[in-house]
Length: 197
Image (cartoon, rainbow, N blue to C red; front, side, top):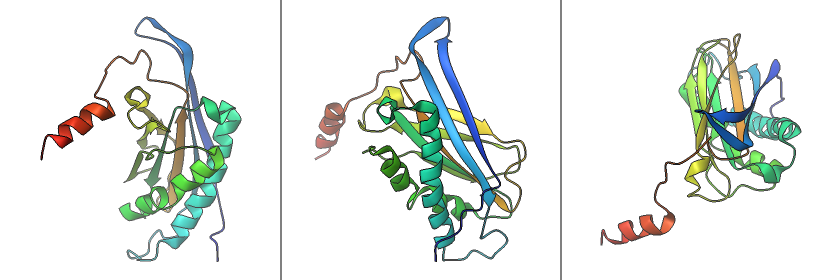
């Protein structure tokens, strides 16, 4: 039986960066993070091996949160990077966060966007209401699009309570402002790895 989605509230964070370090950002960079605060169905129970209720909840929320993010961003083609995070209340277990962000959340995000070939960065931890968490974002379609890698720090003043969870998805429309830290490309990494033989 599917886990019922029982959300206390949805939250969203949005910013449009027009300038950074005295330099214009053109086009402006949009960062959007959407989250859900919900009861943790496994809070207070001794480390269960069956994490299915959290996996099912993440699938449902992945669609809902991505749909809400698209309401802010518009065209999915405008998205360059994505990420996910979970902050688990102190009545939970670190593996509750992993169950939310690793098994199926990414597939729900991709199905809603109808794109996204690359691994989705994820972050999960135990925290208290008002605690911050970094939503790490990485490129959707080009693995070595290093300029798309970014971090969005968020906090919800009254969440998560000890028996709650905060699940977040994040999207950006461009590179970090004034990105100029060029790293290696795939060919350079492949050549280095080949040299190990």
